[in-house]
Length: 434
Ligand code: NDP
Figure 1 (cartoon, rainbow, N blue to C red):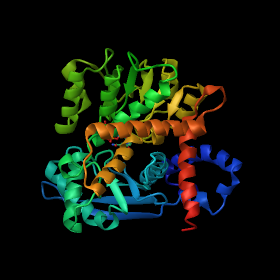
Figure 2 (tube, rainbow, N blue to C red):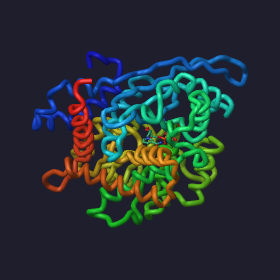
Figure 3 (cartoon, rainbow, N blue to C red):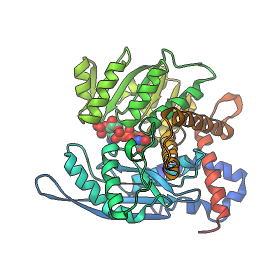
Figure 4 (cartoon, rainbow, N blue to C red):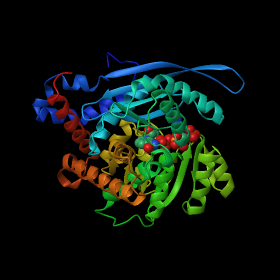
Protein backbone atom coordinates (compact mmCIF):
# COMPACT_ATOMS: atom_id res chain seq x y z
CA UNK A 1 0.00 0.00 0.00
CA UNK A 2 2.82 2.40 0.82
CA UNK A 3 4.53 1.66 -2.46
CA UNK A 4 1.45 1.93 -4.70
CA UNK A 5 -1.08 4.16 -2.89
CA UNK A 6 -2.58 5.32 -6.20
CA UNK A 7 -3.31 1.81 -7.53
CA UNK A 8 -6.68 0.85 -5.99
CA UNK A 9 -7.56 -1.95 -8.40
CA UNK A 10 -4.15 -3.59 -7.97
CA UNK A 11 -4.36 -3.34 -4.16
CA UNK A 12 -7.87 -4.82 -4.27
CA UNK A 13 -6.71 -7.79 -6.33
CA UNK A 14 -3.77 -8.43 -3.98
CA UNK A 15 -5.95 -8.10 -0.88
CA UNK A 16 -8.55 -10.49 -2.26
CA UNK A 17 -5.86 -13.06 -3.01
CA UNK A 18 -3.96 -12.65 0.25
CA UNK A 19 -7.10 -13.21 2.31
CA UNK A 20 -6.91 -16.82 1.09
CA UNK A 21 -3.16 -17.21 0.77
CA UNK A 22 -2.03 -15.71 4.09
CA UNK A 23 -3.84 -18.21 6.37
CA UNK A 24 -2.45 -20.98 4.13
CA UNK A 25 1.09 -19.62 4.53
CA UNK A 26 0.66 -19.54 8.29
CA UNK A 27 -0.07 -23.26 8.14
CA UNK A 28 2.83 -23.84 5.70
CA UNK A 29 5.66 -21.55 6.88
CA UNK A 30 8.11 -22.63 4.16
CA UNK A 31 6.23 -20.22 1.84
CA UNK A 32 7.30 -17.31 4.07
CA UNK A 33 10.92 -17.67 2.97
CA UNK A 34 12.86 -16.20 0.08
CA UNK A 35 10.84 -12.97 -0.16
CA UNK A 36 8.23 -14.90 -2.06
CA UNK A 37 5.24 -12.63 -1.47
CA UNK A 38 7.29 -9.47 -2.03
CA UNK A 39 8.46 -10.87 -5.37
CA UNK A 40 5.00 -12.08 -6.34
CA UNK A 41 3.44 -8.60 -6.07
CA UNK A 42 6.22 -6.84 -7.98
CA UNK A 43 6.03 -7.16 -11.81
CA UNK A 44 9.18 -8.54 -13.40
CA UNK A 45 8.98 -5.67 -15.87
CA UNK A 46 6.59 -2.87 -16.95
CA UNK A 47 7.01 -1.33 -20.37
CA UNK A 48 5.31 2.02 -21.07
CA UNK A 49 5.43 3.68 -24.43
CA UNK A 50 4.08 6.44 -26.66
CA UNK A 51 1.51 5.49 -29.32
CA UNK A 52 1.15 8.33 -31.85
CA UNK A 53 -1.36 7.94 -34.69
CA UNK A 54 -3.25 10.06 -37.22
CA UNK A 55 -7.06 10.12 -37.46
CA UNK A 56 -9.12 10.31 -40.67
CA UNK A 57 -9.14 14.12 -40.49
CA UNK A 58 -5.34 14.25 -40.33
CA UNK A 59 -5.19 15.13 -36.61
CA UNK A 60 -2.43 13.60 -34.52
CA UNK A 61 -3.34 11.71 -31.31
CA UNK A 62 -0.98 10.35 -28.69
CA UNK A 63 -2.06 7.45 -26.48
CA UNK A 64 -0.15 5.60 -23.82
CA UNK A 65 0.70 1.92 -24.37
CA UNK A 66 1.72 -0.63 -21.73
CA UNK A 67 2.82 -4.20 -21.22
CA UNK A 68 3.06 -5.55 -17.69
CA UNK A 69 5.25 -8.69 -17.64
CA UNK A 70 4.24 -9.92 -14.23
CA UNK A 71 5.61 -13.41 -13.67
CA UNK A 72 7.39 -15.96 -15.86
CA UNK A 73 8.00 -18.68 -13.27
CA UNK A 74 5.96 -21.35 -15.03
CA UNK A 75 6.07 -20.22 -18.67
CA UNK A 76 6.20 -17.26 -21.08
CA UNK A 77 4.14 -14.22 -20.08
CA UNK A 78 0.57 -14.69 -21.32
CA UNK A 79 -2.38 -12.33 -21.06
CA UNK A 80 -4.55 -10.04 -23.13
CA UNK A 81 -4.35 -6.50 -24.44
CA UNK A 82 -7.11 -4.08 -23.42
CA UNK A 83 -7.97 -0.94 -25.42
CA UNK A 84 -10.25 1.21 -23.26
CA UNK A 85 -10.04 4.85 -22.07
CA UNK A 86 -9.86 3.67 -18.44
CA UNK A 87 -6.62 1.70 -18.96
CA UNK A 88 -3.81 2.66 -16.55
CA UNK A 89 -1.01 0.94 -14.61
CA UNK A 90 -3.26 0.02 -11.68
CA UNK A 91 -5.80 -1.77 -13.87
CA UNK A 92 -3.15 -3.59 -15.90
CA UNK A 93 -1.24 -4.65 -12.78
CA UNK A 94 -4.43 -6.05 -11.23
CA UNK A 95 -5.22 -7.93 -14.44
CA UNK A 96 -1.64 -9.24 -14.76
CA UNK A 97 -1.60 -10.32 -11.10
CA UNK A 98 -4.89 -12.22 -11.52
CA UNK A 99 -3.58 -13.74 -14.73
CA UNK A 100 -0.59 -15.31 -12.96
CA UNK A 101 -2.86 -17.33 -10.65
CA UNK A 102 -5.39 -18.11 -13.38
CA UNK A 103 -2.74 -19.40 -15.75
CA UNK A 104 -1.35 -21.51 -12.92
CA UNK A 105 -4.75 -23.23 -12.68
CA UNK A 106 -5.05 -24.11 -16.37
CA UNK A 107 -2.60 -27.04 -16.18
CA UNK A 108 -0.65 -25.36 -19.04
CA UNK A 109 2.85 -23.83 -18.81
CA UNK A 110 1.87 -20.15 -19.01
CA UNK A 111 3.26 -17.19 -17.06
CA UNK A 112 1.23 -14.02 -16.50
CA UNK A 113 1.12 -10.62 -18.18
CA UNK A 114 -1.31 -7.99 -19.43
CA UNK A 115 -1.15 -4.90 -21.59
CA UNK A 116 -3.07 -2.37 -23.57
CA UNK A 117 -3.64 1.32 -24.12
CA UNK A 118 -5.96 4.13 -23.07
CA UNK A 119 -7.32 4.17 -26.63
CA UNK A 120 -11.06 3.98 -27.30
CA UNK A 121 -11.84 2.06 -30.49
CA UNK A 122 -15.55 3.01 -30.21
CA UNK A 123 -16.63 5.28 -33.04
CA UNK A 124 -13.29 4.94 -34.85
CA UNK A 125 -13.11 3.82 -38.48
CA UNK A 126 -11.35 0.60 -39.45
CA UNK A 127 -8.53 2.67 -40.96
CA UNK A 128 -8.04 4.59 -37.70
CA UNK A 129 -8.02 1.38 -35.66
CA UNK A 130 -5.50 -0.10 -38.08
CA UNK A 131 -3.16 2.89 -37.81
CA UNK A 132 -3.44 2.80 -34.03
CA UNK A 133 -2.69 -0.94 -33.88
CA UNK A 134 0.29 -0.56 -36.21
CA UNK A 135 1.75 2.24 -34.11
CA UNK A 136 1.14 0.24 -30.90
CA UNK A 137 2.90 -2.81 -32.33
CA UNK A 138 5.81 -0.81 -33.75
CA UNK A 139 7.00 -0.53 -30.13
CA UNK A 140 5.53 -3.67 -28.52
CA UNK A 141 7.06 -6.08 -31.04
CA UNK A 142 10.55 -5.77 -29.54
CA UNK A 143 9.28 -6.93 -26.13
CA UNK A 144 7.26 -10.01 -27.14
CA UNK A 145 7.95 -13.40 -28.78
CA UNK A 146 6.43 -16.86 -29.00
CA UNK A 147 8.71 -18.14 -26.22
CA UNK A 148 8.79 -14.85 -24.31
CA UNK A 149 5.44 -13.07 -24.14
CA UNK A 150 2.29 -13.96 -26.08
CA UNK A 151 -0.50 -11.34 -25.94
CA UNK A 152 -4.18 -11.92 -26.83
CA UNK A 153 -7.44 -9.92 -26.86
CA UNK A 154 -9.45 -8.40 -24.01
CA UNK A 155 -11.92 -5.50 -23.79
CA UNK A 156 -11.77 -3.51 -27.04
CA UNK A 157 -9.40 -5.98 -28.71
CA UNK A 158 -11.06 -8.67 -30.79
CA UNK A 159 -10.45 -10.33 -34.11
CA UNK A 160 -10.13 -7.09 -36.12
CA UNK A 161 -7.53 -5.58 -33.78
CA UNK A 162 -5.65 -8.88 -33.41
CA UNK A 163 -5.37 -9.08 -37.22
CA UNK A 164 -3.88 -5.59 -37.52
CA UNK A 165 -1.52 -6.20 -34.58
CA UNK A 166 -0.36 -9.52 -35.95
CA UNK A 167 0.15 -8.17 -39.48
CA UNK A 168 2.43 -5.44 -38.14
CA UNK A 169 4.34 -7.83 -35.88
CA UNK A 170 5.00 -10.17 -38.78
CA UNK A 171 6.30 -7.34 -40.93
CA UNK A 172 8.63 -5.96 -38.25
CA UNK A 173 9.92 -9.28 -36.90
CA UNK A 174 10.10 -10.87 -40.35
CA UNK A 175 8.83 -14.18 -39.05
CA UNK A 176 5.56 -16.12 -38.92
CA UNK A 177 5.18 -17.44 -35.39
CA UNK A 178 2.33 -17.79 -32.93
CA UNK A 179 3.21 -14.60 -31.06
CA UNK A 180 -0.42 -13.56 -30.54
CA UNK A 181 -3.45 -15.74 -29.83
CA UNK A 182 -7.02 -15.12 -30.94
CA UNK A 183 -5.85 -14.94 -34.56
CA UNK A 184 -8.17 -15.59 -37.53
CA UNK A 185 -8.50 -19.29 -38.41
CA UNK A 186 -6.82 -18.93 -41.80
CA UNK A 187 -3.58 -17.61 -40.34
CA UNK A 188 -3.01 -19.77 -37.27
CA UNK A 189 -5.96 -19.11 -34.98
CA UNK A 190 -7.57 -21.93 -33.03
CA UNK A 191 -11.14 -23.04 -33.53
CA UNK A 192 -13.23 -22.36 -30.40
CA UNK A 193 -10.93 -19.53 -29.18
CA UNK A 194 -13.65 -16.85 -29.62
CA UNK A 195 -16.14 -19.08 -27.80
CA UNK A 196 -13.72 -20.35 -25.15
CA UNK A 197 -14.18 -17.97 -22.21
CA UNK A 198 -17.98 -18.01 -22.38
CA UNK A 199 -18.23 -21.75 -23.02
CA UNK A 200 -15.67 -22.47 -20.31
CA UNK A 201 -17.66 -20.37 -17.85
CA UNK A 202 -20.78 -22.45 -18.44
CA UNK A 203 -18.83 -25.72 -18.21
CA UNK A 204 -17.59 -24.50 -14.83
CA UNK A 205 -21.10 -23.52 -13.69
CA UNK A 206 -22.37 -26.96 -14.70
CA UNK A 207 -19.77 -28.48 -12.32
CA UNK A 208 -20.70 -26.08 -9.52
CA UNK A 209 -24.41 -26.86 -9.61
CA UNK A 210 -24.02 -30.60 -10.32
CA UNK A 211 -24.74 -31.73 -6.75
CA UNK A 212 -28.21 -30.14 -7.01
CA UNK A 213 -28.98 -29.85 -10.74
CA UNK A 214 -28.17 -32.42 -13.41
CA UNK A 215 -28.57 -29.73 -16.09
CA UNK A 216 -29.53 -26.06 -16.51
CA UNK A 217 -33.05 -26.71 -17.85
CA UNK A 218 -35.30 -23.73 -17.17
CA UNK A 219 -32.83 -21.95 -14.86
CA UNK A 220 -32.87 -18.16 -15.21
CA UNK A 221 -29.47 -16.65 -15.96
CA UNK A 222 -28.68 -12.94 -15.64
CA UNK A 223 -25.66 -11.93 -17.72
CA UNK A 224 -23.92 -8.55 -17.82
CA UNK A 225 -21.99 -7.30 -20.84
CA UNK A 226 -22.74 -8.11 -24.47
CA UNK A 227 -19.22 -8.53 -25.81
CA UNK A 228 -17.18 -11.63 -26.50
CA UNK A 229 -17.51 -13.35 -23.13
CA UNK A 230 -21.19 -12.49 -22.62
CA UNK A 231 -22.19 -13.62 -26.12
CA UNK A 232 -20.75 -17.11 -25.85
CA UNK A 233 -21.75 -17.59 -22.22
CA UNK A 234 -25.29 -16.83 -23.37
CA UNK A 235 -25.02 -19.24 -26.32
CA UNK A 236 -23.80 -22.16 -24.20
CA UNK A 237 -26.26 -21.45 -21.37
CA UNK A 238 -29.11 -21.55 -23.94
CA UNK A 239 -27.74 -24.77 -25.42
CA UNK A 240 -27.81 -26.24 -21.90
CA UNK A 241 -31.50 -25.30 -21.56
CA UNK A 242 -31.20 -22.13 -19.45
CA UNK A 243 -33.15 -18.90 -20.00
CA UNK A 244 -30.88 -15.87 -20.52
CA UNK A 245 -32.90 -12.98 -19.11
CA UNK A 246 -30.48 -10.03 -19.24
CA UNK A 247 -27.53 -8.57 -21.15
CA UNK A 248 -25.96 -5.13 -20.76
CA UNK A 249 -23.44 -2.64 -22.06
CA UNK A 250 -22.11 0.64 -20.72
CA UNK A 251 -25.45 2.25 -21.74
CA UNK A 252 -27.73 0.01 -19.66
CA UNK A 253 -29.48 -3.36 -19.34
CA UNK A 254 -31.92 -5.21 -21.56
CA UNK A 255 -34.46 -7.41 -19.74
CA UNK A 256 -35.88 -10.45 -21.56
CA UNK A 257 -38.30 -12.21 -19.16
CA UNK A 258 -39.00 -15.11 -21.53
CA UNK A 259 -35.32 -15.65 -22.35
CA UNK A 260 -33.13 -14.84 -25.34
CA UNK A 261 -33.90 -16.85 -28.49
CA UNK A 262 -31.43 -18.17 -31.09
CA UNK A 263 -32.69 -15.66 -33.64
CA UNK A 264 -32.22 -12.77 -31.20
CA UNK A 265 -28.72 -14.04 -30.36
CA UNK A 266 -27.76 -14.02 -34.06
CA UNK A 267 -29.01 -10.45 -34.39
CA UNK A 268 -27.10 -9.38 -31.27
CA UNK A 269 -23.82 -10.84 -32.49
CA UNK A 270 -24.10 -9.16 -35.88
CA UNK A 271 -25.11 -5.86 -34.27
CA UNK A 272 -22.24 -5.85 -31.75
CA UNK A 273 -19.44 -7.46 -33.79
CA UNK A 274 -20.07 -6.28 -37.35
CA UNK A 275 -22.18 -3.13 -37.10
CA UNK A 276 -20.57 -2.11 -33.77
CA UNK A 277 -24.00 -1.01 -32.56
CA UNK A 278 -25.46 -0.46 -29.09
CA UNK A 279 -27.62 -2.73 -26.97
CA UNK A 280 -30.43 -0.14 -26.89
CA UNK A 281 -30.85 -0.81 -30.64
CA UNK A 282 -31.20 -4.53 -29.89
CA UNK A 283 -33.89 -3.79 -27.25
CA UNK A 284 -35.74 -1.53 -29.72
CA UNK A 285 -35.63 -4.15 -32.47
CA UNK A 286 -37.39 -6.77 -30.31
CA UNK A 287 -39.51 -4.48 -28.10
CA UNK A 288 -37.64 -5.37 -24.87
CA UNK A 289 -37.45 -3.17 -21.79
CA UNK A 290 -34.13 -1.26 -21.75
CA UNK A 291 -33.10 0.18 -18.37
CA UNK A 292 -30.65 2.98 -19.20
CA UNK A 293 -27.64 3.23 -16.87
CA UNK A 294 -28.87 0.21 -14.86
CA UNK A 295 -27.02 -3.00 -14.03
CA UNK A 296 -28.69 -6.41 -14.44
CA UNK A 297 -28.55 -7.44 -10.78
CA UNK A 298 -32.04 -6.28 -9.71
CA UNK A 299 -33.97 -8.94 -11.64
CA UNK A 300 -34.97 -12.31 -10.12
CA UNK A 301 -32.64 -15.03 -11.39
CA UNK A 302 -31.09 -18.36 -10.36
CA UNK A 303 -27.58 -17.76 -11.71
CA UNK A 304 -25.70 -14.47 -12.23
CA UNK A 305 -22.76 -14.20 -14.63
CA UNK A 306 -20.96 -10.84 -14.55
CA UNK A 307 -19.19 -10.69 -17.93
CA UNK A 308 -18.47 -6.98 -18.50
CA UNK A 309 -15.75 -5.36 -16.38
CA UNK A 310 -14.13 -4.92 -12.95
CA UNK A 311 -16.20 -3.78 -9.94
CA UNK A 312 -19.52 -3.93 -11.78
CA UNK A 313 -21.24 -5.75 -8.89
CA UNK A 314 -21.09 -4.28 -5.37
CA UNK A 315 -22.48 -5.32 -1.99
CA UNK A 316 -25.88 -3.75 -2.68
CA UNK A 317 -26.14 -5.63 -5.97
CA UNK A 318 -25.06 -8.81 -4.18
CA UNK A 319 -27.80 -8.45 -1.56
CA UNK A 320 -30.38 -7.77 -4.29
CA UNK A 321 -29.33 -10.96 -6.08
CA UNK A 322 -29.45 -13.05 -2.90
CA UNK A 323 -32.84 -11.63 -1.87
CA UNK A 324 -34.19 -12.38 -5.34
CA UNK A 325 -33.26 -16.06 -5.08
CA UNK A 326 -29.94 -16.21 -6.93
CA UNK A 327 -27.98 -19.26 -5.71
CA UNK A 328 -24.90 -19.21 -7.97
CA UNK A 329 -22.58 -16.43 -9.17
CA UNK A 330 -19.71 -17.20 -11.54
CA UNK A 331 -17.47 -14.51 -12.99
CA UNK A 332 -16.82 -14.26 -16.71
CA UNK A 333 -15.14 -10.88 -16.30
CA UNK A 334 -12.01 -10.23 -14.22
CA UNK A 335 -12.75 -9.04 -10.65
CA UNK A 336 -16.32 -7.88 -11.45
CA UNK A 337 -17.37 -8.30 -7.80
CA UNK A 338 -16.12 -5.92 -5.14
CA UNK A 339 -14.68 -7.41 -1.94
CA UNK A 340 -17.92 -6.38 -0.18
CA UNK A 341 -19.98 -8.32 -2.72
CA UNK A 342 -17.83 -11.42 -2.29
CA UNK A 343 -18.31 -11.18 1.49
CA UNK A 344 -22.10 -11.09 0.98
CA UNK A 345 -22.10 -14.16 -1.29
CA UNK A 346 -19.97 -16.13 1.14
CA UNK A 347 -21.94 -15.03 4.22
CA UNK A 348 -25.14 -16.21 2.49
CA UNK A 349 -23.28 -19.42 1.52
CA UNK A 350 -24.36 -19.25 -2.09
CA UNK A 351 -22.09 -20.71 -4.77
CA UNK A 352 -19.53 -18.12 -5.89
CA UNK A 353 -16.65 -18.63 -8.35
CA UNK A 354 -13.98 -15.95 -8.90
CA UNK A 355 -12.98 -15.16 -12.46
CA UNK A 356 -9.50 -16.58 -12.09
CA UNK A 357 -11.13 -20.02 -11.97
CA UNK A 358 -14.35 -19.66 -13.94
CA UNK A 359 -13.09 -17.53 -16.85
CA UNK A 360 -9.83 -19.42 -17.39
CA UNK A 361 -11.20 -21.15 -20.50
CA UNK A 362 -10.09 -18.29 -22.75
CA UNK A 363 -6.45 -18.41 -21.77
CA UNK A 364 -6.56 -22.21 -21.75
CA UNK A 365 -7.59 -22.30 -25.42
CA UNK A 366 -4.99 -19.60 -26.13
CA UNK A 367 -2.48 -22.06 -24.69
CA UNK A 368 -3.89 -24.71 -27.04
CA UNK A 369 -3.51 -22.23 -29.93
CA UNK A 370 0.18 -21.85 -29.00
CA UNK A 371 0.59 -25.63 -29.04
CA UNK A 372 -1.09 -25.92 -32.46
CA UNK A 373 1.12 -23.13 -33.85
CA UNK A 374 4.26 -24.78 -32.50
CA UNK A 375 3.22 -28.12 -34.04
CA UNK A 376 1.99 -26.42 -37.24
CA UNK A 377 -1.27 -28.32 -36.85
CA UNK A 378 -4.94 -27.37 -36.52
CA UNK A 379 -7.21 -29.36 -34.27
CA UNK A 380 -10.92 -29.69 -35.07
CA UNK A 381 -13.49 -27.69 -33.13
CA UNK A 382 -14.61 -30.91 -31.43
CA UNK A 383 -11.07 -31.68 -30.28
CA UNK A 384 -10.51 -28.19 -28.87
CA UNK A 385 -13.92 -28.06 -27.20
CA UNK A 386 -13.31 -31.42 -25.56
CA UNK A 387 -9.93 -30.25 -24.23
CA UNK A 388 -11.54 -27.00 -22.98
CA UNK A 389 -14.28 -28.94 -21.23
CA UNK A 390 -11.83 -31.23 -19.50
CA UNK A 391 -9.57 -28.31 -18.45
CA UNK A 392 -12.57 -26.54 -16.85
CA UNK A 393 -13.52 -29.75 -15.04
CA UNK A 394 -9.96 -30.11 -13.82
CA UNK A 395 -9.88 -26.48 -12.59
CA UNK A 396 -13.09 -27.23 -10.70
CA UNK A 397 -11.54 -30.32 -9.11
CA UNK A 398 -8.45 -28.30 -8.16
CA UNK A 399 -10.64 -25.64 -6.51
CA UNK A 400 -12.43 -28.35 -4.55
CA UNK A 401 -9.08 -29.69 -3.34
CA UNK A 402 -8.21 -26.48 -1.45
CA UNK A 403 -11.70 -25.00 -1.10
CA UNK A 404 -14.06 -27.75 0.08
CA UNK A 405 -14.80 -27.10 3.73
CA UNK A 406 -16.74 -28.64 6.54
CA UNK A 407 -20.51 -28.78 6.01
CA UNK A 408 -20.13 -29.21 2.26
CA UNK A 409 -19.66 -25.51 1.39
CA UNK A 410 -17.03 -24.99 -1.31
CA UNK A 411 -15.00 -21.80 -0.96
CA UNK A 412 -13.93 -21.38 -4.59
CA UNK A 413 -11.99 -18.22 -3.72
CA UNK A 414 -9.67 -20.11 -1.38
CA UNK A 415 -9.59 -23.05 -3.77
CA UNK A 416 -8.47 -20.99 -6.78
CA UNK A 417 -6.11 -18.67 -4.94
CA UNK A 418 -4.27 -21.36 -2.98
CA UNK A 419 -3.95 -23.78 -5.90
CA UNK A 420 -2.62 -21.04 -8.23
CA UNK A 421 -0.29 -19.79 -5.51
CA UNK A 422 1.19 -23.21 -4.71
CA UNK A 423 1.99 -23.90 -8.35
CA UNK A 424 3.69 -20.56 -8.99
CA UNK A 425 5.34 -20.31 -5.56
CA UNK A 426 6.92 -23.76 -5.81
CA UNK A 427 8.33 -22.90 -9.25
CA UNK A 428 9.69 -19.56 -8.00
CA UNK A 429 11.35 -21.11 -5.00
CA UNK A 430 12.98 -23.86 -7.03
CA UNK A 431 14.39 -21.25 -9.42
CA UNK A 432 16.04 -19.21 -6.64
CA UNK A 433 15.87 -15.48 -5.95
CA UNK A 434 15.70 -13.91 -9.41
P1 NDP B 1 -15.59 -6.96 -25.01
O1 NDP B 1 -14.90 -5.69 -25.33
O2 NDP B 1 -15.91 -7.92 -26.09
O3 NDP B 1 -16.96 -6.65 -24.24
C1 NDP B 1 -16.97 -5.92 -23.07
C2 NDP B 1 -18.42 -5.72 -22.62
O4 NDP B 1 -18.42 -5.12 -21.34
C3 NDP B 1 -19.20 -4.78 -23.53
O5 NDP B 1 -20.55 -5.14 -23.52
C4 NDP B 1 -18.97 -3.44 -22.85
O6 NDP B 1 -19.98 -2.47 -23.14
C5 NDP B 1 -19.03 -3.82 -21.40
N1 NDP B 1 -18.26 -2.87 -20.60
C6 NDP B 1 -16.94 -2.58 -20.73
N2 NDP B 1 -16.57 -1.63 -19.85
C7 NDP B 1 -17.70 -1.33 -19.17
C8 NDP B 1 -17.99 -0.43 -18.13
N3 NDP B 1 -17.03 0.35 -17.60
N4 NDP B 1 -19.28 -0.38 -17.65
C9 NDP B 1 -20.25 -1.17 -18.19
N5 NDP B 1 -20.03 -2.03 -19.17
C10 NDP B 1 -18.78 -2.12 -19.66
O7 NDP B 1 -14.69 -7.65 -23.87
P2 NDP B 1 -14.68 -9.17 -23.40
O8 NDP B 1 -16.04 -9.74 -23.49
O9 NDP B 1 -13.55 -9.85 -24.08
O10 NDP B 1 -14.24 -9.01 -21.88
C11 NDP B 1 -15.20 -8.84 -20.82
C12 NDP B 1 -14.55 -9.18 -19.50
O11 NDP B 1 -14.08 -10.54 -19.53
C13 NDP B 1 -13.32 -8.34 -19.12
O12 NDP B 1 -13.28 -8.21 -17.72
C14 NDP B 1 -12.16 -9.22 -19.56
O13 NDP B 1 -10.98 -8.91 -18.87
C15 NDP B 1 -12.70 -10.58 -19.18
N6 NDP B 1 -12.08 -11.73 -19.84
C16 NDP B 1 -12.08 -11.82 -21.20
C17 NDP B 1 -11.53 -12.93 -21.81
C18 NDP B 1 -11.61 -13.13 -23.29
O14 NDP B 1 -11.25 -14.23 -23.74
N7 NDP B 1 -12.09 -12.19 -24.07
C19 NDP B 1 -10.83 -13.97 -21.03
C20 NDP B 1 -10.98 -13.82 -19.60
C21 NDP B 1 -11.56 -12.71 -19.05
P3 NDP B 1 -19.63 -1.26 -24.15
O15 NDP B 1 -19.59 -1.89 -25.51
O16 NDP B 1 -20.73 -0.30 -23.95
O17 NDP B 1 -18.29 -0.73 -23.71
